[in-house]
Image (cartoon, rainbow, N blue to C red; front, side):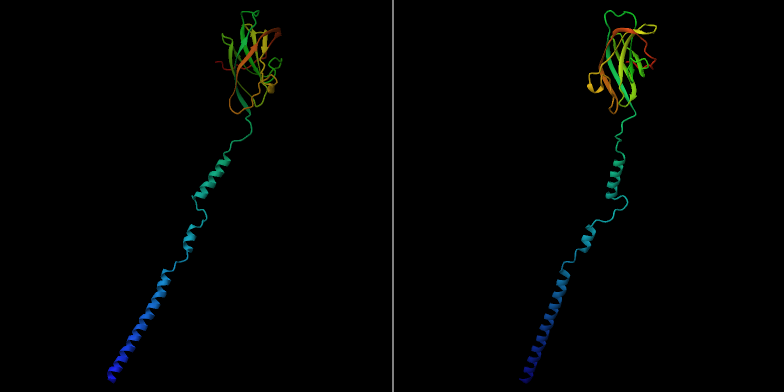
Length: 208
C-alpha cells in the first residue's frame, strides 16, 4: 500500500513535471511565434520607394535636357534684316496716251517719283497691263510703286503715276514688317500726263 502510494505519488509528480514542461515549451514557442509573425518595419520598402539621385540617362535628366534644349532652340523675336516682297497689280492708261510705247513698273524704297529714288527693281507689264514684281527691301521700309509709259527705245516718260496704299498706317506707301514672304495684290496704278520724267536706272526683277 505504501509502495503503491509512493508510486502513485511519483507518477503524479512525473505527470505534473511533464505538464509543467509542456506548458513551458508552449509558452516559449508562443513568444517565438509572435516574434516571427510580428510585421517587420517597412524601412527597406520605403527606402526603395524614396526618390534617388538621378543617374545618367534617367528620366529626370532626360526631362531637364529636353527642357534646356527646347529653351535654347526658341526662335529669336528680332526682325529679319530684309523682307521678300511680291507685288501684283495693273496699270490704267489714259485714252489720250500714245498707242506706242512700253509700260514699266518701278519699285522704290522711298518715293519712286523722286529724281534720286532708291529703286529696288523694274518690271515690264504684260499685254493686259498687269504686272508682277519681286524685290527685297529693308524691314519696315516704306515702299512705293510707280508705273510709266516710256518710249520703246527708252527715255523720259510723259505718262506716269504712283500707286497709293489705302492702309493709313503706310501713309500711302507699302510697309513690309512681317516674318516671311510679304504679298501685296491688286495694286492699281493710274497714269497721268505730266512733265517729262526720267526714272533712274533700276535692276530688273523677275516677271510672271
